[in-house]
Structure formats: structure tokens, C-alpha cells
Image (cartoon, rainbow, N blue to C red; front, side):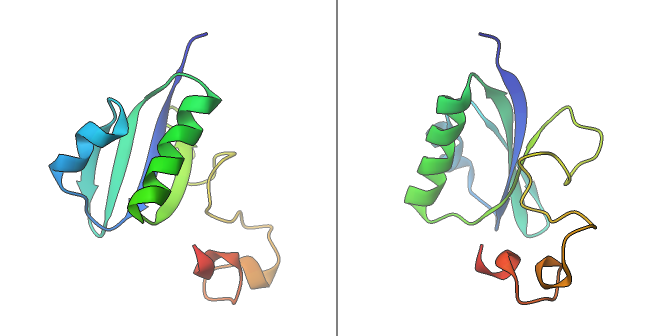
Length: 99
């Protein structure tokens, strides 16, 4: 089964020492966040990466296919789409603040 490239956006900046912990993913540091980019073989591999993030206590911001033109609105993104109810929008008291 062929894998897919994913972007996993994390809150905060991770040091390069974490790169080896994430199974061939490349760390791309940014302003206040780090993006893991790389090939994900299958759903089990993706869940394994997400479990490892949880185990390290790293805050997850978004998970999205890397080849999606609409960054931040992919099917696995934690960024709410525009059509969500107001309590799920930024600034509201919705799920976004609990991530």
C-alpha cells in the first residue's frame, strides 16, 4: 500500500533531537510552531505518530495531507471550517481551546 505525505502541525518549537523520534518525518520550525512533514505509510503509522506526540505531551494543532492546496482545511485538520457554529470559531468557548 502506497503512503501519503502529511503535515502535522504542533504548538511550540521542537528541537532537532525529536526528529529521530518521529519515524523519518522532517521537522520544519516556524513561528511558535513546528511542522512534521513526511510519508505516512498507512493509518496505523499515522496513529502511531499521534500517540508518540501525546506521550511526549506535545500539543497538536492540525493534521493534513501535505499535497492539499487548501492548507488548514483538510479532512483531518483541527482548524474549524467557516460553516461551524459560532461556539467552535476562534475566540469562542469551543473545542479549539481544549486542544
